[in-house]
Amino acid sequence: MLRPDAGTVRREAGRIVASFHRDRVEEGDDLSVEVSFPKQAAGEHLPTTADFLLGLFLVVVGGAAGGVAAWRWRGPRPERTARRPPPDLDRPMAVALLGNRDGQAFLATLFDLARRGHVTLRHDREDQAFGTTDVVRLETHPAPNDLSDFERRLVDTLGEYETLDDFWSDTRSFRSDVMSDVRGVLFERGWMENHTVRSGLLLGGALVALLGGFAAVVTGDSALRFYLLFGGMGVSLGGFIAAVRQYTWTEDGARRAMALRAYLDHEKSEIERLRETSPARAAERLVDALPWLLLHDEVSRAWIEETKEALDAADEVPELPDGFVSLVETEESARAPVAAFLPVVTVMGAVESSSAGAVGAAGASGAAGAAGGGAGAAGAA
Image (cartoon, rainbow, N blue to C red):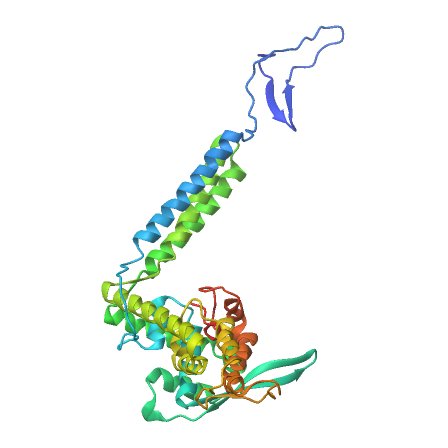
């Protein structure tokens, strides 16, 4: 209660301030003011432990909802076994179907072109201001009658560059356009479904929910603002998770994808088995299957070097394609089987260490699906 009645009570700088106005008081007159409580004044709600726990619960619920949606939208997952890649699936389409980074399509195809003699990959070293750096020099020998449309476009473009690093740093738009065409073929064949609009709406909704939650904190002063903040964070998290399902398999696409993964697992296991019994044969089989194996989650330079280590104790020299050449002097201590296989390892190492394989180097240390353009050289998924 406040008297005179014309007075006000307000919150100011953490204090309760009572103010009033009265006509001028003559000298000698008495003036009395009475302030008593309770008197309601707008205050700031400070969150309690229960508020935070409820908020975290809202975040978890939102994220879980997004995870459930992403799982339900993942498409079919049939069980398949295979000893060969699906005959109607080439490497670029396989990369797009598996959801791997686009760069793997070009690097896997590049290794296949080297294996078939259309391209020679020459490992070399260049002097730099702070030492030497590994490079992969390109030399093309196209045979148009033995090239697919994708391979022909790649070979024609490779011919314009001296090194793989130059090609990679200057052709981002080209690679994006080519892979867009590849995905279009998958949609036309009915192997994948495009949910770009749905993903875009989810991302937009997630952003709005997040901004709305922060706006509630800035403009509100009650417990509700914290619930709106955490609720917005939960909705945003769920939206981002669910938006991942931009492209999904159809039944036909899933069968091919699962068959391809079964083939990759089988081929990797066979090479590991051959290392124990016939390292030279393992090296030959690895190079022959390498363009496909680059799509496997666990194939990296480190994994390939295990074959080189097995060759240290071998007498038989593997017969490998001429597409892998090292211009770097081989160590005198290297035995003949190792020397024959070394260009493959050094080319892989140069690709990983170049800017084209910067993300691929992370794949070499065990990161499977996280590799980007150059990740194909490291074999990340």
